[in-house]
Amino acid sequence: MPSFDVTNEVNFVEVRNALDQANKEITNRFDFKGSDARVELNDKALTLFADTDFQLDQVWDVLTGKFAKRGVDVRCMEPGDIEKVSGNKVKRGVAVKNGIESELAKKIVRILKDSKLKVQGSIQGESVRVTGAKRDILQEAIALLRKSIDDFPLQFGNFRE
Image (cartoon, rainbow, N blue to C red; front, side, top):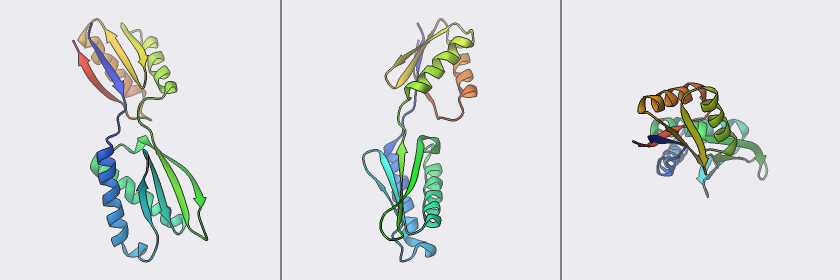
């Protein structure tokens, strides 16, 4: 039976490249001269550092611009709360969401069941496998999922006949 997988994979090589470019731009920008503004990657999470809340927002804008240029979807990033570090310095943690969470996987399966298409969705770890009788039905399912879920990036791969 033909099938495909619905996943969300973040390319951490591109994340690292975007982070390096953002740090390089931050060190060269005039409004960040003499400040401790930077971005660090540690264990699949980002940490943004700056002197003020405004500079922290500027660092986030620079980073999202670099993500867009490198093809990394910003919807995979989940910024946390702003924390005071020492004195007036601030930091913000940003979680990188990789894979499909169980809530979203259940939502995908529910959308497929409610659509009355002759496809079957099954949750397999951090992905959802969709099987159907014909390739055309699977392509309709892909179009339906792209239209229905727009708040989280989905990739469709492992298409088998």
